[in-house]
Length: 324
Image (cartoon, rainbow, N blue to C red; front, side):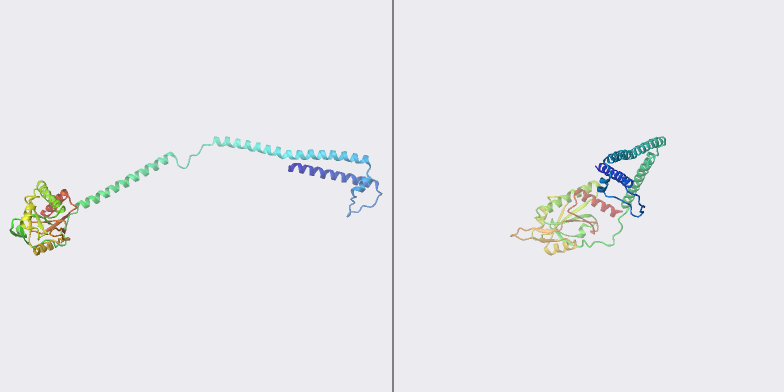
C-alpha cells in the first residue's frame, strides 16, 4: 500500500514538473523580450497559461509528459529491483561463504569436551578411594575406643557406701541372730513383707532362681536373706511358712518395730504403711536387693529392672572382681 502511494506521488510530481517546464517555454517564445531579472523568476499562473497555450501544443506537451512519466516509472521500478537483486546476490554470496566455511569446519579435527572419559574415571576412582579410606579409619577409631573401654578396669572407689551395719533380729526359727552370724558368706538381702500381693513374691522367686544359677555357673554359694518390714503381722511363724514357698536356703528375719526401723535405716530402705482398713493394709517399700561380701559389707545393689540372667551375671562379676 505504501509503495503504491509513493509511485502515484512520484508520477504526480513528474507530471507537474513537465507541465510547468513546457508552459514556461511557450510563454517565453510568445512574449516580447525583456531583460531577465535574476532574483524574481517569473512563474505565470495556470489560468493565464491555458489562454496562451494552443490546443495542439497542449496535446504535444501531454505526449512528452506521458513518455517522461513512463520512463521515470520504469526507472523507479528498476531501482527497486536492483536492491532486491543485490540482496539476492548478497544472500547467495553469504550462502556460498557459509557452505565454504562449513566445508572448512568439517575438515578441522573436533576438539574434545572439558571432561573426557579418562578424567571422569580417574575422578571416580579417587572419590571411591577417599570414601573407603575414611570408612576404614572410622572403623579403626571405633575399635580403638571399644578396646580402650574394655581394657579399663574398675579402680578402687573413693569411699564406701554407707549401707549396712549391725542389727539384731529374730530368724524364722525363733532364734536371735546378728550380722555376725552371716560372716564368711556372700549374702543377698531383700526387704519385704509376707502379705505383699505380687511384687515380693516375684522378687523372691527371681532371687531363688538366681542363686541356683550362680551355683551352677560359678560354683559360688550365695545365702539369701528376707527381712520383714511389717513387724506387727510378720511373726517368726508367719515368716517361716512364707520363706519355705521360695527356697530351702532362704532365711527369714523379723523383730519388733524398733529393731526393724533400725535395720531399715542402716540399709537405707524406705517403708511405710498405706491406708488401713481394719487389720488389712499394705506396706509401701523399696524394691532392692543388696549384695553383701563375707564381711557383711555392701558391694552392690540390684533393682527391680534386673531379670534372673542379669542378676546372676551381675553377682558373679562383682564377686570375681573382689577376689582378684
